[in-house]
Length: 280
Image (cartoon, rainbow, N blue to C red; front, side, top):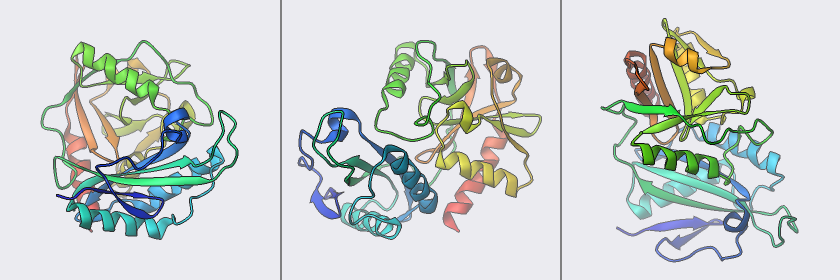
């Protein structure tokens, strides 16, 4: 199976280096990215991904790269799907500052890459075995103008994932600098209590996830109440369900937080609705 990537609008072999060592994404994590699920050769929720990308580039003072817009993004994904023979996959779009300089860049010019990776299922599917999770105690996430954006500086999430690995956990819960629970190491979080959905507010510092918004919209469209609010460990202990969301994997339910055990009835319902939406 041939592997290719897109670099600044050009199709390139994916088994050779395509960016130089002085790329600012490598040196400084200077950029943003989007992870996009591809189902039946089509990128899911591209309007939402593009809107978030534009907002992230605005915050980082990045110019939109030449040869990249909402329409061309869809075209590039289709081109890669065909060349790589991956109709069901995960696309990653990375936009970086393509300029010389050290911490002080010499321009705001943007560059971009798009790549595809295989996924274990052709569409979103709920995990068979629920996750086992705990609170990550070693660092907290600062609430600032970058909090909601998917920047290339992901060290907090890497460190949290390493902490999970060392303890045999599937994932962990991150807190902000005020002690509120805001997300997992790989996505947004929701709890279900008495049939009502609760998720941390963006003002608490969580990523403004595309799948987070899809789940909120699906819930509202189907008569499920949703509240964006601050969450504490006490809320976890009182909840009936706990699940995580991201654009690559959809919805993943949690079986246990310490000694607390959860069901996954609403998570299963929302996955069914999500699959129907991607196929419509």
